[in-house]
Image 1 (cartoon, helix red, strand yellow):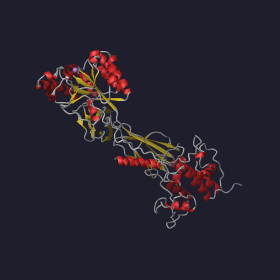
Image 2: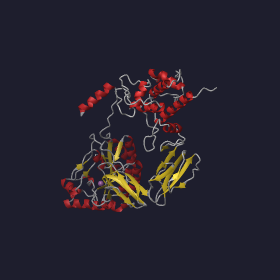
Image 3: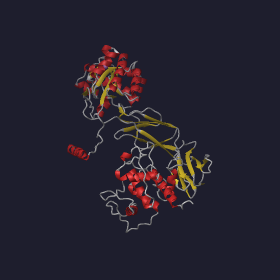
Image 4: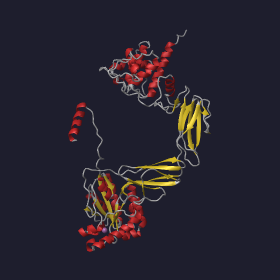
Length: 581
Ligand code: NI
């Protein structure tokens, strides 16, 4: 891998290109886990407000007596994505208890926390006073989480001291020890969080700290921190809920990042480890509230919860077609009403209800949507029946190129890109431009035998083969010095100017002696293109942009190509008219 990398680097230096490979894993961030012990208490709600405002997730090592008194606070903690963890029922020194005594004081809290996180959730344990031995570790039946930064907040009871000690001792991968039963710890830690975030720390739960670094937490083992190891598996992104109407109900699809489990509810209930696990799309009756989150572990290793309130399904956007001078609308839900408007020449523009195909005349723009009592309004579909009889879905009257595109399409010079889409913003290739010119020229077909342009990269039987041969024979294109034509390359404006200038000469237009003075970037125009750009400027086929720039190496869109082609035809047609008396 290293060898390959240096080869690539050497190559890119030789070629003078910058080679940017995407990183295999997210850039490593400074991660830190803040933990609060001995609560919940009277200041915990204020702490939760502060954490929420800062988007910070913490881990709470709680005593059972606190959990029993502050049940609503624990529910909120969990709902807001903090990790619930166990600090025993009533804070004994565990080394003084029997094996079963340890098990009992831990289990009692787990049972209470299960009411919030769901039966069978797992909780990290922190032994009171950090006091443990191998018997305690085995009886607790969980990883034992200690700390690497002790603020001694319980001793100082001073917000500034708490803040300063956090700032002084914080390090990447640290587990910080605080106590939310002290008001000063709440204030001091929130102030320190702001500074540490500004220093590039991301606050995560203990479980996320280890998961992000690909480290495991094993029952019976003790942990004080999770040092940086070059890995960061990245934060968990929230899932996406999408809905589509299906015979009076709503089909719900939820997507989330690989490896996570999606938990969801459709009855407005809070999510926990006992919520439904998503296995595939499902239908619901409306109205309802859908909640979902993506998790490795619902207790402390999950995304934010996304919520979608659905009163009724959204109708499917109808599909419009113009067939034999009739407007045909299909494709929305049975039972949804279709409303349409026709504007344009001789049309009223009033909204009408669609029941059957409607006669329609060129020069009309139709827009339509669907809705009813049981469906929310769909998106709006639009279709244009142009004055020259083209049908477009993506070109509309009022756009600067509308008339040119309409004429280019009606004259057969340019064709649509399928399904009535003209794709006005798509870039034009060299092969396409020459093909458009060939069609515009109405030249005698070159024929198969003669369709040999001698360019090494123009194969027989391509849509452009005959056009390129014709253009080459008539000196409209000369190709590149290496005898290639590069038909699939996006054409630059100076190449296009050159081709159009040569075409005008082929058509017998007198030599033009224009200047490049009008362009502020005239110096960027290649030597070989200067006379041609001056000529097409004199003919008003090309103009500068709003800044007065010609932009010689910029590419062109299909809308721009249509405009130049039609202007050119106008010029040639004017030249064909008999001179005025
Ligand atoms: Ni404690």
